[in-house]
Image (cartoon, rainbow, N blue to C red; front, top):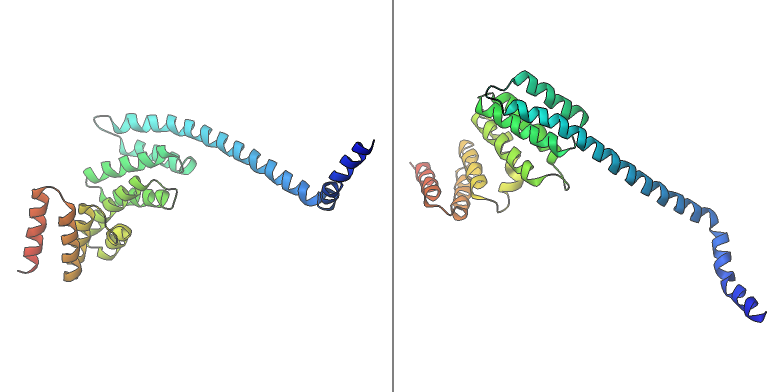
Length: 214
């Protein structure tokens, strides 16, 4: 009997604590349950969206792979992906493919638009860094060809301000040269040369630097 009493007394402080913070504890438990439920529900929706996006992308891939892709049909499919499944990887790869196709067909305005959308979708900590870099570099090349030097530089500044691959440093040098920022252009060209492993690319960079002084 004494043992039972002692056991009850041992748990008494805990019971008092639970009683004192009963409302808070209940709210915490409810919050945890809701968070778990929301996470499961969100994952299910994401899986369903991926399945639907995959089906739509299959139609996109079939059309873009044909001998003569219908640009209007591709735009309809792409708009559907962007409107309903913009956060899926299928939408991102569709944007990349469509922008590349437009560039090959010299439809640079449409190409730039899609590359810029892809940049927005893949920006941030959780974004697809590979797609983001491809989209930024491709957009910068188009902007450079349109003499929009500030916009072109802003597009790749996050890469060129740090050590990156040779091509991005070279592209930055091309833009800076067009802006008549000679010292900065040479600096980027020298970084590009140090990153390139092949002699052909190094020779091209050397020619660009030499031409600056002529």
